Image 1 (cartoon, rainbow over the protein chains, first blue to last red):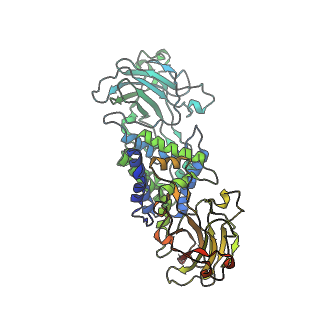
Image 2: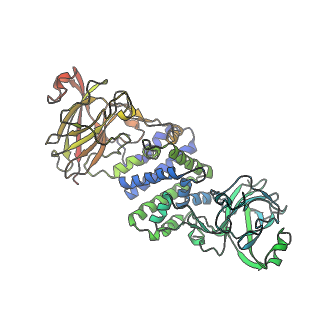
Image 3: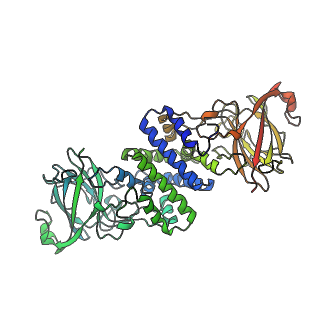
Length: 289
Length: 289
């Protein structure tokens, strides 16, 4: 390697890895090196630009906490997180999505027909749907949906001392045929944090920081692959400019406004529903394990 | 972008950057996104692998200090730093190199013929050379060499409380014809820090952490481009496995052992030289500004 050149560097990296213990680790890291090298060659990156990138990473380290990981945010804003989701979605299954920073373990149980609204501010929304086998289209038995969303003020419970703990977090048990319904309030768009180096990148590129409103869901059922996803609302103004490239058409849920009296009768909040509610029809397709 | 796919994501990133204020910033970030996307598609990176990478970056942030930057170390070990040097070296000039973590501002001045050895342990080495114009091959007037190296124990002064401050750091003023000579001790190979996530990567790839011994030099002269480089010793056992891909053949300095009495007579240490000294012949080619 005493004569490494821009053309031989990638092979030199691979040669150095000849004694790697694990073939997949070697494959991934050699591929990463190859593509980083191609980036530097293509841009003829200057020392000043290289240092600016390293200082952005350094500041990302400084601003990160257990609750806020700026590296994940960079991955999201580069579309890397979304792409990892895309290449890992089984054929026919609902597109998967990254977990995001607001999931909480141990969400309160919610029966089919349960209520997350509890009279809180916001547009009352009834979500009804089914969990289906991605291959057969049949209902999946024994499905649970670990769900979380923000309140009408845009904040998740963990961000907002005014909300009860785990407000709008729930572990829903579906009916034996995979169907489910629950009442809640309409989730709201919000911005990713833009006070750190990832926000500097957004500003440099003239991009905005908005995410369309979404409902996070982790679907699980015996015999099926664990599915992490998020659902969007069909009339959301940010669907075409999600800062983190998270929207796929199968994740956009059709909406209509219906009389409260037309909502599913087994909803616990049925008697308390207002005259008109937003109705979202949600289908989740799970792949066999 | 509500229908982003692995094939359209890179274009979506570029479309998001349509309002970027600076064309070069956009070019660099869009290229980085493109190559990161290609990496994820090629490897079909799993969520677990993606998270392992992000956790390596997170730990890099945690272990970094003003004195130790793990992100720069990752860049070095991926060959990215070396490649930035390569694409920024002007034709005909001495290959440039990154600064490394041990440069100190305000090195003590050293006249042509000066001494860094000062009787310290190690093999006595005489370095003699010239600073030349990369285009004409003529000597460069008014050149200074800001140099630093480690001691015989492998440590730089800043790492070793037993050494005087700025030991083996010097700002050498060359003769008017660009020639110079000085006495020192042979610099030693050493390892990059391997107690953090970058070291974990080295272990996973079965790589070692050694760098061949080298003399760091920042060459400056009126009318010439600032040159940051490092020079290696032709008999070093690590020349072909430098952990950071820093060796280029024009940076490898020929060595011979000569009688101390054959060393340049204007060396301040001439009378004190041992019977045999290591002699390194060093030519630095500078590009016009």
